[in-house]
Length: 573
Ligand code: C2O
Ligand code: CU
Ligand code: CU
Image (cartoon, rainbow, N blue to C red; front, side):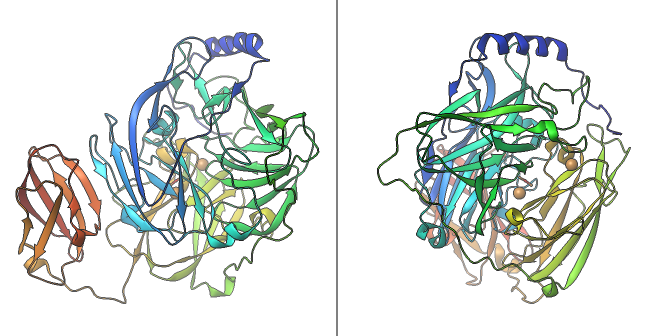
C-alpha cells in the first residue's frame, strides 16, 4: 500500500490502552439503541448545531454536531410525488452544506459543495420527490470539511414511501419491526472527544456504543446505512442465519435475495428482512465479519500505527446485540417471494460511454493526497463534464488503484452493467447510487440524466470515503439543456418592486415583465450577510419572512437565464 500518512499524529497507544481498559470493564454491558426521531409531511425544519452528547458511558460528554437533537438527526419520511420543503438552518459557527444523498433533484437544491450555507443562514430548498421507496440520507458536503462535519455526527436518514412498496406486506412500523441502523465507527481521545480520523476504534449504531435492541419474534426489517467515514462492513449474523436483501440504495429489488454476508461500503444502504418467528427469548448479534476483508478493502487494511491504525481493523466485531421479544399484534410472518418489476436501462440505450480512471498518486493536496479521478485533483472552479439533458450514458470506471473505492454520483440512480467483467450480483441488480470499484478493476454503470438542467450548479461524483473526497477524489458535471431557450428578461429585471414595505409575514415581488423567472433569492441583512437562501422559490405565493428579526434587509434576485443579480431594500417590522 502506497498510502501516505498525511495527518497529525494521534496518540494511539493512549487511546488503545483506554479502550482496552474500558472494554474489560464494560464488556458485558450494552446500551439501548437510540432510534432517531421522525419528521413527516412536506415541510421540514432542520436546525444544525454544535452540541454535546453522553456517548461514552462514563466521563465527559462528547462535543458533537447534530440536527435538532444531540447527535445525528431526525429520520425524514417523505412520499413519492409530494413536493417537500426544507428549512435548513445553519446554527454552526462554520459554513456547511446539507446534501440529500440519492435524491433526484435540481442541482441548486442538491446540497453539494456549491450550495454553501453560511453560519446563521436558513437555506430553503424544495423538490418533487421522484425517487422510489427506499432508504436515503442527508449529510454535510462542504468541500474539504466533509470528514470533519460528518465525524461530529451531522446527518440523518430519509425514508421514501411510494405506492408500490406500500402495497407489499412488509414490516413498516418504525422502531418496532422496521429498524433504522446507521453504522459508523469513531475514535475517542482520552477526554471522550472525537478525533477526525478515517477509522474509529469503536463501533457505533445510531450514535450508541455497544448497542442492544429488542425486536419482536416475527419478520423484521433492518434499514442499514453505512455512514462510516471509510470502513466497509461485511455484515452477517452470529448464528449464521441467512437474511433477505430487499433493496439496493435506490429502491426495491425484483425479489428478496437470500444471503449470509453483505459487504456494505461507505454511503451504501440495504434493507434486509430477518425472520425471528422461532427465536422468542433468544439473542443474536449482527456482526461485521471484517477479518476476512482483503488488505485493499476499507477496514481490511492493517496499519501498526499512524492515523489509519485502529482497533477494529481486519477483525470480526459486534454491530448490534439483538434480543428477540414478544410478537406484535398483526405481525408480518412471511417474506414475500417477489417485490416489484425492476426495469433497468438496456446498455443499448446509451448515447455515449464516458471513460473515467481512478489511480493512486503522489500529488500532495490539502491533506496529503493518495487517490485521484482522471489523474486530476478536484477543482471546485473547473467543470469536468457537460452532459446533455436526457442523455443515457455508460460510465466506465477503470481503476489502477491498489485500493478499492466506493464511487458515488449525484443526480441519478444507476444500474450496474458489470464489475470486473461480470454482471452485478443479484442484490445489486437494481438501482444504486454508490458502487464499489475494487482495486485494479473496471466497473460500468448506466444512467439517464433526465429532468434537471442547470448551467450554474454542477452535480458531483466522488469516492464516498470522506478523506479521499476531501483530498480531491471528486469531479463535477453540468447537465445542460440545449433544446429550450429561456426568454431573457434581464433588461427588465430591475423593474420590480417588493411589497408590502415594511413587511411582516410575507414579502411579495411585483414584476412588470410577466415572464419573470427567478433562479435564486437571497435575503441579506444590513451588513450583507445572507440570512435566507431560497433556490428557485415559489415566489408567487410570497416569501415567508416571519422568522426574520425586525430590521433593514436587502433582497437579492438572480435572473434564471442570465444569472444577473438585482438588489432591493425592504424593512421587516
Ligand atoms: Cu453522500 Cu456526494 O455524497
Ligand atoms: Cu450524494
Ligand atoms: Cu476512495
